[in-house]
Image: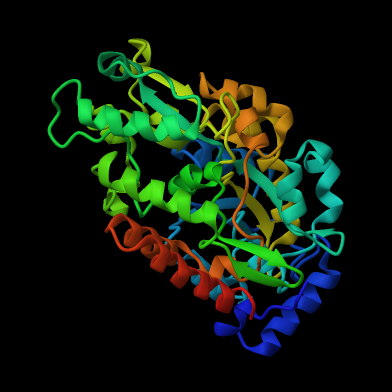
Length: 425
C-alpha cells in the first residue's frame, strides 16, 4: 500500500512520525498512562447508539471499574474526518476510543492514528467478528479496529399503499424503479406532495444502495492506481435510471440534510410509501403501522429475479487512538462494548452486531433478511484517500447535479476526473 499523508493537512510531519512509531510498538499499551482509575472518552457518531445504550455503557463501566468513568460523546458525521485529523494527532485532545465509519477507517489506520489491537481479537469475538470489516482494518497482518455494527440496507414499504395502487413487491431492480414511479403517480390516498419513494441527493448511502445493484462503480483499481468508473456503460445506465427516479419517483430529491436525518417521519405521516434504510429505521417506524400490518420489508433486488442486489454495507468500527491517555481502561471499555449484553442490545436496535454470533437478536422482519443483505453488500473504494476526498459533501454535490437534471455523461466525466486526481496522491 502506498504511504499516505492524510493527516498532514492538520498535523505536522513530525507528529505523524510520532503516531506511526507509537502504533508500530503500541499493542494495547498505547499512550503513557497506567493509572488504575480515570476517565475514558468514547466518541460515537450521531444516530448510532440509542440514549439507552449510551447510558448503559456509562453505568455498566462505572459499576465494573469503581472510581473510573466512561464518557460517551456523540459526534456529528458532517466534518468528522477533519475533527479526527486534529484530535487524534494531539495527546491532549485525543479521545481514547472512536467509532469510525468503515469507509473512513483506512484513512487513519494508514497513518498510525490507531493502536495495534491485534492481541484482543479472540477476547472480543474472534472469527465471529464481521470478516470483511476486520480485513479492511488490517495492515501488514496487524488489526487496528474491530467492527461495531453493520448497517444492512433494505426496503421498508407501506403494504396498504402498494395494495391500493395495485403494485406487487418488485423482484428486480428495474421493477423496483417502476414501483416507486407508479406509486407516486397513483398517490392512493390523495396525499399532498406525495412521494413514491424517499430518495435524496444528501443521502449518498441510500442512493448507492440503489445504484450498486445496477453495476455502478465509483472507481476501479488498476494495479496501484485508481481509475474513475462513473463513465462506464453500466455506471451511466445506473445514473440515468437514478435521474429518472429523482424526477418521477420522489419529491424529496433535493431534501435538506436536516430533513434526511429524520426521514422516517415522512413514512410515518404517509408522505412516502418506500424507504431505503438500515434495520434500526424499523424501530423508528410507528408501532401502530406495524401492528396494523401496513409495513413490509424486502431486500433491494438485483437485475436477476429473486436475487438481492449489492447494496452499500455501511457500518462502523471501533478503534483505540494511538494517543489514548487511558489505554488500559480503554481496553476494558472495548471488552464491555463487545460483551454479549451490549452486542445483543445493538441487534435489538436493528443493527447487525459486530459479533455475528448475536445477529439472531436483530429485531422484527428486517432481521430475517439482514444476513442475506450483508452477504451481498459492498463498500466504497478502500483507499485511504476516499474518506477525505469524497466525504458526504462531495458525494452530495455529485448526486445533486444528477437530481437537478444536468447531463449525466458530463457529470460522470467530471466526477471521474476528481477520482483520478484525488485517489492517486
